Amino acid sequence: MSPSDRSNFQTTGPWSRSEIINYLDSISIPIRLSVVLPSGWPVIVSLWFILEGEKLWLATPKSAHIVKALLETDRCAFEVSSDKPPYQGVRGRGIIKVHDNEGERILHSVIDKYLASRETSLAKWLLSRSSAEVAISIDPVKIFSWDFTERMQSDSN
Image (tube, rainbow, N blue to C red; front, side):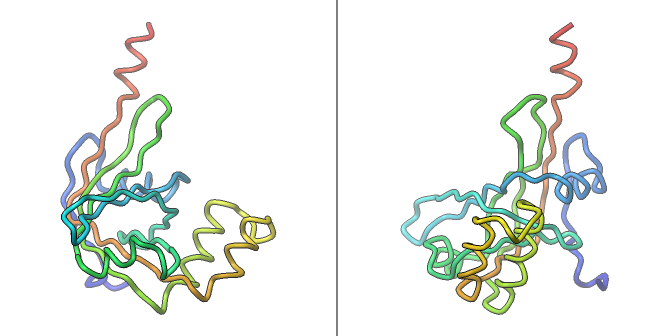
């Protein structure tokens, strides 16, 4: 990956840039993606993602309502965090783009990450419709991290 392909996002919060990247690369929970629809209403969807360099990639069917919304905007908000203690995660803003020609590749990658096998019934079902997938890329602009591990441990003592 060339330097020009790398995002130049700002960070705030307790984690360093490399800790944020490590977290996003290693965690296997969906990303919550938020955009504002052309009607002015916000929408949030949860999707599987992978990290390539500093870019987040997601796959979804081209017919999904979120794809129509994404064709109308290039801005999004996102969050990746667990709902189980200790509470930690990242949220941010980014530039979003739909890629018609990357959907199948990204679908394979998210299946490998989240299911660890392409032989499960869910993986086979998803792969059976892979030609209808598009990829969504997010170039983060700003990422905020939080980690309540220490605070929650001290409360339990």
